[in-house]
Length: 403
Ligand SMILES: C[S@@+](CC[C@H](N)C(=O)[O-])C[C@H]1O[C@@H](n2cnc3c(N)ncnc32)[C@H](O)[C@@H]1O
Image (cartoon, rainbow, N blue to C red; front, side, top):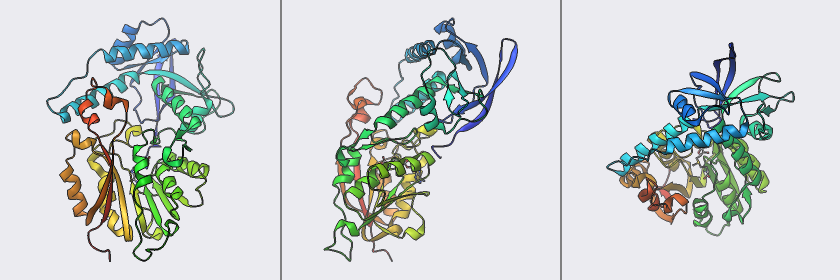
C-alpha cells in the first residue's frame, strides 16, 4: 500500500434545511462517514458520544477550541472501558488492536471543515482555528477546487497533520549522524527510536571478495524501503561509495531526497521508486539493508503500514530476492524487532526457515534493546511483550557462492 494513497470521495448532509455536500479527505485512508450532523459548543459530550458511537459523524460549527475539548471528552469516554486481556499474548494483541481501531473510528467522527483559500492553500473557517495552511499543504499537496471549496476532515487527523508539520520543521536528531537531524514528512516512518539506526552505524562493513585492502568508498549499498533516508545516510557517512535507496511511497521518496540533500550526501545516495530492490541495471551491492514493518498484522490505516505488514510480505520479499542481488562477499542486513515472536505472531523458527529457503545463512547478529515508555509501563496491556522486545541486525550471506 502506498502511504500517499488518499480517499477522494464526497459527503452529504442536511443543514438549516439545505442539502450540502463536500469532498472527504483522509490521509489515513479512512472511508467517509455515512451520516453527518452539524454540531457546536451547545452539544453535551454524552450526546455527542452516543451519536458518534451510533455512526453519525459530527461536523463542528463552533469554536475550534471547543472542538478540541469535545475530542478530549470523547477520548475519555472511549477509554473508560479498560482494555481486555486475552488468554495468550496473541489474543491480547488482537483485542488491543480491535480496541485501538474502535478508538480511532469513534474519535475520527468529529469533523472540521477545511476550505481552499484564494491562493490555493487551506484554512479552517472556525473561530480561533490555528493557521493550518503550511501543514496541510505539506501533508496533502496544494488545495483542490476554487476559493471557498469545502473539504471535511477528522479533527484528529488534522491534529496529526499539525503535529507532523512540527516534527518536520524541527527534525529528529540522530546520534548515528553525529546529532544531525532528519526531517520526517507526514506519513513517513520516523527514526524517533534510534537504536536500530545505531546497529547500522556499528555493524562491520563486509570486505568485497576482490578488495581485501580497499576502503569503504569501493563498497556499494542498497537501502530497501528507505523512509526518511536515514539508513542510506548513515551508510554514506560511513564512507560507502554509492547507495541506492528505494521506496514505494511518494511521500517517503520526496522526504528521503530532501534529507539526503540536507545531510550533504546527495552525491552518494540515489533515491529511486521501486518495489523492494532497485531495477536490475543497478546491479548487485555489497551491503543491502532493510528495515521492514515488523508486525505481521493488517494495518488499520495507511499510516500504520510502516509497522504492520500482513503475511510479512516485505520481509519475505526481501529475503527471497536478497541472494541474487548481493555482490560476492556481500551481506544483507535485516533489521527486525522480535516483538512478533513475543506476541506469538511469528515464531523465530519461521524466520529462520525463510532465511534458509532463500538460500541464506546467518553470519552474525547485533542486538539492541529498545528504549520506549510503553516498555516500562506495567499497566499497558502488551507490557510483557514490549518489555522483552529486542531489535536485531541480522547479517545474512548467501549459503552458496552466487553464480
Ligand atoms: C519500517 S519503515 C523503515 C524506513 C527506514 N528504512 C528506516 O529504517 O527508518 C519501512 C519502509 O518500507 C517502505 N516499503 C514498504 N513496502 C515496500 C516495498 N515493497 N518496496 C519498497 N519500499 C517499501 C515503506 O514505505 C516504509 O518507508
